[in-house]
Image (cartoon, rainbow, N blue to C red; front, side):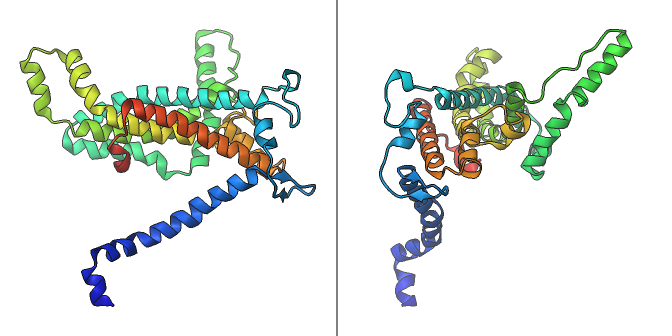
Length: 305
């Protein structure tokens, strides 16, 4: 048997992927299928699931009441939450790209001895618990926080009246927290793309008469596009489903689709509607990601990131 295994390369490959396959089926495929089945069920009187087939949960998610598809029964609440989540994810992704690209470019062009130090500083915040980092922003943004404290001190120094800014529990605070939390996931793939660019290409562009701006547009940006695509996927998808940042920095007032799903399972005890919202979010995210990658292609750095 062992001799046959040594000679059979196909069997060796199957044995190597078997643990991963079991893991994927047990912890991904089966739960996803169970969520799909539950999404077509009904909520029981005790908060359980009655396994039947109904589209009521999806009809309700689209803003209509089950059994009433007229405009008089339409309520845009859930669609507004989905739209708000999509808008926030796009805003976060665009801001993260605008912040990460210059920093990644700076690190990639830094002397070799300093690059590891800069990358280390980028990764240091990830060593701290996600929730603790979000709570740190509460200390910064609250009425008696760091920013208002500094502004109050500056106003007192200049003899000016000062009213503390209401920054916490606002959509802006949630956006700041999202950008901060997911910035490293954009820096790393973009840096990987920029670091791989052959310096000889810049010399060739200069020999052909291209200035710095034209070299960036014709050489640097196109070659770093795979990193941008990979970073976008790594940022956009988690932002669409996260709920911790909006719960803490939004004060449960900025409701995103992640908060909706969480509350359906834990507070409202409606796993059927929560499952439908989860699948709707997954499909919506896959559609956006599909068209984005069709336009720009998958980045090779997504694996490295």
